[in-house]
Length: 252
Ligand code: GLP
Image 1 (cartoon, helix red, strand yellow):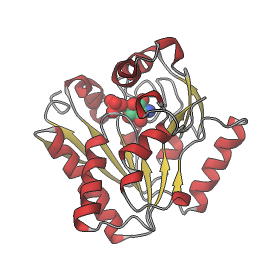
Image 2 (tube, protein in one colour):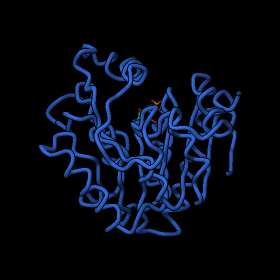
Image 3 (spheres, protein in one colour):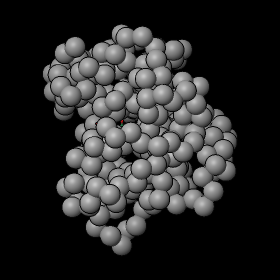
Image 4 (tube, helix red, strand yellow):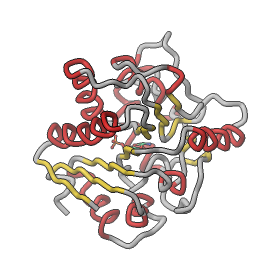
């Protein structure tokens, strides 16, 4: 496991973007697994800069996002803040700024009428695309990957998951609260890739910043492998692993 520690969020983001850019340059039709949350925003900004200033080409890149809130889908008629779907997040924070083709973007459909069938199809689509070359991951405050909350099987597949109080609190504060959306209106379920699905990627890039992540980062990387910290599955991963942390997230 390659653990890289950088002084600041900006430096962490630049390093992570460089890992992704290296994959895109060496395999222009690569399959990227992408993540949401506040952590990857700096990485996406850097990728956008590389696209605009250095011509980083996404025209053949395929992407699969980790997760989406159940009941939400992109609604461009609303202002960004009022549309808390991860589809909108990806559109605003990355996709609309780069030359990725719409048909190459895959995000779980939070508005699906049949979530169970959708989850099976999502797994099929990942397989059809040849699997994920590089999966970008953050880490939740309770140690989760995607929305694989504590207790999720480390062999889990794409499915509907109930969110924990901590995840609802964290994401409320970071996103919904700023938009003035009442907490009761937050979705309590999500579609998420499973830990087993994530472990099938060929490479993993995990990023984390800030003191509030220091405990879970230490537990995930150096603690026992446990379904109580689903990101600890990183220790079971047999492909290439890069973890990029800022100094505060690495402090424990
Ligand atoms: C959400 C996402 C995760 C993300 C986590 C951390 O729960 N489903 O994929 O890693 O938030 O978010 P943040 O980066 O905002 O701390």
